Structure formats: structure tokens, C-alpha cells
Length: 101
Length: 491
Image 1: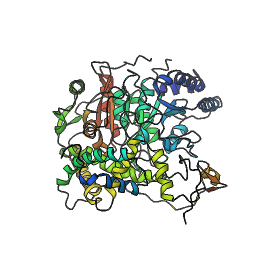
Image 2 (image 1 turned 45 degrees about the horizontal axis):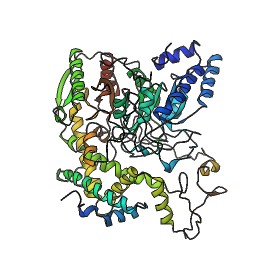
Image 3 (image 1 turned 120 degrees about the vertical axis):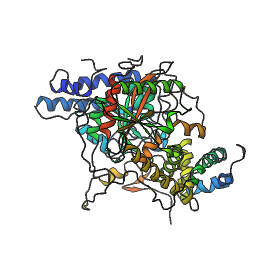
Image 4 (image 1 turned 90 degrees about the vertical axis):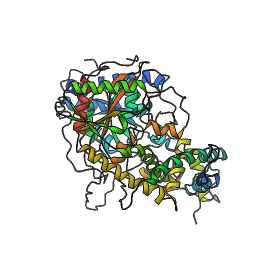
């Protein structure tokens, strides 16, 4: 496969589908560029597919420390005004968004 | 006292004994940062209020009250850590203008110990990169030669520390982002064991890999800073309850009989730049002369570490970055009218405008790896191999106290010369990423210069929660370093 022919796994249609899942608009140039680059990366990843991992529990966090629990006590650390202070648009203490229903 | 070379504990002692005031010390560094930052772009934002923090320390001392172990010591903080009342951007347009209502635990602990916060340091956008070139706030420069990158993602921390714009800095490390810039700028940087330092209030990149740590001028300062920021935090359930040792008091340069692991798979790596190889070999000779013993260890899966790393970190990033939706904080596209605007369009346009290219690339890769039909083949498979990698490290550390290696395959490079090349990217991070995957502590200590006079560090990796062991080896190397006392010309 030449560098200019991305694998099917990462053709432009797949990239656009993935971008929709990620709620991310891509320009046609970005889609093209990512299609080519990510195809190469995925080919590189394929090297690990041959490693025998049968019966191996995936390691999703590295140190597997013993998690401690604590009482679930309600605390009020922040005021509502503090929490909406950074909102791009707000009305009183409410976030302003497009219609969702 | 020369503030450009003084250690943190010397400075703290002088302040406590009223030989110099905390305000004088902090003003000195704030002025220095104001003067030198325009040419380095290490700081995204300075915090003039740090002088008030310092004055409070002086008042406490005047009243005879106890002050912390970092009383009056000025710090710069990577702009990935939330600072109450100080804008925190992650070097992204997406978070420009975001003023956190709380401190990250690391910053809260530094402040409790009396440190003053001089400002927020530059980085690659959302810590994704290794040259600081993807920052929304512009590239940061290496004080050893401003045409060169400081490394990344904690490039601002390394640049500010190497030019002593502050006494200490904090960086974060997901795949090498403390160690590589520390190497490129000639400072001491340590990435602690996963779970040693709280991630609360740190803008998340890849939650199972991220750790914050000190990037400072000496091993002693690194040990002291780590003591302050480490330890269990009820606000981060992944922090360990293990007691934090007195790392700085326990420092020992006695290496007699200490076993240093040399990774068989790294040893004859042809990828390594000749100047780095020379520095590495010099470090081995030094360790030998100090009485250390060498043990060959084998970690064959390190060969796949970079593949695993990019897959896992991109997957976690795509999930973590889903929170940037233009609703609660940060950037929102300039919509004239929200009524009638489809919600998906609202998100997609905001995110398209708010994120830079490198961030988008990783979101796409990560979303793909986690998507239906690919999850098992990519994300899950990588996590399985990740366990096997950690097992190999466990076997290696049964035979040695610390592993020595280069930090990166190349020294710092000229700004704008590294175009995006996935394969090159793999090669560069080969020595650092496996440490994060296995959750191990790792550090970089300055030990050489290239033929062009640019810094080279040596990496030490330890077993889980064995920071003391790698700090001790680094301490011994530091005292015998061929570049001891060498500083960039901005001094």
C-alpha cells in the first residue's frame, strides 16, 4: 500500500463518521490529512495484534492500588454563582443552550 | 545569598531567619520573569498577586508563627493545573478565559507549604505534544538557544526553570512530558509513581497515565517539592495511602552495591543520537566508579510501548475532552441565534473552532479505537499488552534498584523543523512512554551537552513507589555530572 492510499479502515468516510461521533466538525483538508496519517498509525498498531494475550485481564489503571472509601457526606464547596461564572452565555444561574427538546 | 543558585531550603531558612524577606525573593523572580519572558514565552500569564502571598509569609514570620517548608519559595505552574482565581487555559483556545473557582490539590499543597505562585507556564495544547509548538499561546523557546524547542509538553516549565525565572516549577507527564523537556533544557524533573500525586484539578489528558511532578534546579529541590505535593487525597480516589517518605532528608549518594539495570533491548539501539549515546556511556562509567553494579534486564515489550501509549492515551483523551461542549465554561462559537440551532451542530462547530489540530487528531484516533467494532481489537488489546509490559517490569525490578537509559533518542531540535510524522514520533518517545504505561516513577537528571552546547539528561526509572531509590542515583550522578554548574547564557 502506498502512502497516498489510506487503508480502508481510515478512509474519508470513516473519518467523517468518527468525527460525527466525537461531535467535531472537520474541514475536507483535515479529513484528508487525518485519513492518511491515522492510517499509518493504525498499521503501526497492528503490530501488537499478534501478541498472545489470551486470558490476560486488561490493565486499565497501572498501579491497582486498594481503593479507599469514605462516607458520602454532602458538602457545599461552591456557590451556584461560582459554578456558572465561566459559562459563555447564562441567564441568572442557568446555562444558556440551544433548544434540546 | 545568590538567588540564582540558592536551593529552596537555603532560601526558606534565610527567609525564616529574616536575612531576606519573602517579598524581596518573590519580587526578584517576578521582575526577572517580567524582563526575560518576552523573549522566551515560558509564561502564559504572570500573577502579580504573588507579592501579596509573600508579604503574608513575612507577616507570619514577624508574628513568630510557623511557616511551611517552602515558605517564600516562588513557583511557576504548568497551565494545565487549576489555580483559584488565575486563568487556566491548558494552552488551548478552548479554555481561554477560564478562571477556576478552586485550586488543584498540587497547587493547594504548595501554597500550604508557603510557596508563592508567580504565574502559569506554557505547554503544548492540552499537554499533547513534545515540542511546545502546539500551544495556542505560541511557541516557547529554549534558553540555551532560542532557536530550539524546550521540549514538551511541559516546555514552559523547563524553559522557565532553566533560565531561573522561578525557583521551582510543576509539570505533568503522560508519556514523557516532564522528563523530555527537563532533558532538553538541563533541569531535574521527576514523574512520580502513578497514584503518588493527586490529579484533582489538573486538566485531564489521559487519566490512567497523567502524573504531576517537580521540574527544578537540583535533585534536592526535586525531593523536597515531591514531599510537599505527594500523598493521598480524598479528592482523587486513585491516590495511594502509602506514606510519603522524607525524600530530601533521606537523599544518599552512596551507590556501593546498588544494582543498576540496563535494558537489553535499549542497549544497542541505533536510533540514539551519538551525543546522547556518549552521555549515556559516561553516566555508566560514573556509576561504575561510584561502586554501582550493573544488571542486564530484558523488557521485550518496550518495543510496543509507543503503539500502546498512543492508542490508550488517545482513547482516554477522546473521552476526557468530550466535556468541552461550549456550555459550562470555555470557548463557544459565536452563534448569532441559538433558537433553531441543532444541538449537534452547536457542539461540532464550537469544538472545531476551539481545538487545535493535534488535539483533533487525537480525538479522532481515540474515538475510533473506542468505537463499536474496534474496541476489542485496539483499546482492549492494548490494555492486555499493557499488563504484560508491567509484569516484565516487575521481573526486571526484582533484579535491580533502578533502570538507567537515555530520555529521548534526539536532543532538542530547531523550532519548526519537525513536521508531523507518525513514525518519527514513535521513535522519539520510545524511552519514556513505557514508564507511564506501567505506572512507574521516572526522572531526568542533566548529565551532558551536545556538540552544539545543548543539554542532555539521563533517565532513571524505579519500581512502584521507589522514588527514593531513583532520587539517590540521580543525586550521585548530579554530584559527579560533567555539566554541574553549567547554565544557559540568560544567566
